[in-house]
Length: 197
Length: 271
Image: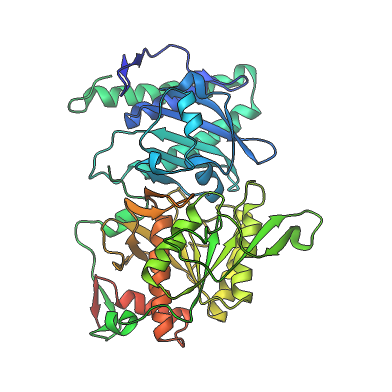
């Protein structure tokens, strides 16, 4: 059982929240990333065809079922800023941001304190979407959280592109990739001091 | 909760690596002492600026760009004040205002409610800054697009020769981003600390300078504020310092500005 900060939990293997047409590999990406950061939730939002909206297509953790399918304007919230600027950002207290998409957060029944967001860029630098992590547990002396999230967001972009290009049996390698990353994180959590998977 | 963006680690290898700077014993006083930024024009190329935010204290002017496929160059330019779509440009402007209270800040909005064409609008914003003889342009944004490498490089060189100092935030993503990668700009990553005039030089470029950018209380939308971390908050601290030195020494060229910043860094020994 993976405990969530609010006391809830979900067993690995249960379905992750993903939108229609989204490969299970993206679901595994958000699950593995949430676990890696010890976060309350992790989500992926993709840029719509018109470039003006972000749609949450995969999520794991608190509010996952509610957030998937939600569409917000690009210029909204911390995720919107990461998409607009192409820069990862960490905000320690989003509740102090008057324009934080509070109604969206409240609709998921989980209002975070901290949000980390990084753009998902394709090989030509175009923004495909945003990876967001809510309330990660980080070591105060650590210097890796934004770096790691930025790197993972790039990998998520590659998975997204590969998913869009492939259908049917060829999806299997991506699903395997997500499974392997998840297993790696579980093993790491099991062996670290005080950790549990 | 404290995390540091990429490149910050370059300034945190236990002990800052010492570098040799200009033979100026009192370089900080020479560069910044008594300066207010008066007479210096600073462009904030970003999401717009809320000129009414109390920590911004008004701006001198503004321009924004919209994509328009039918227009020459693919975009149209609008002169005048405008809102900040997110709050980030306001954050950058307030940091610059805090360091250089009398600088003339201009809002150059290149980020809009649509992600298409970001690179072209970024280029347009830098070109506007050069054409309007900005002394400093703060770029807390970047492009990873290979197709923008050439165009942005060209306009960065134009800025360098025209005397517009481009201060660019480094990115936290793998691989190069533009224009922060170019030698003609002042590239900045975040370092922890509360001292807004703190500065360190990285002996292992391309990112050359580190400034305050971790857990910074910054102005934001709707006259609010947030505590945020990112290289994009470190860059305006350096833009403010450049505004100060150019208000005292208007003749400084971009390469001289960079040399003075290096000499004023905490890990720089007087040569």
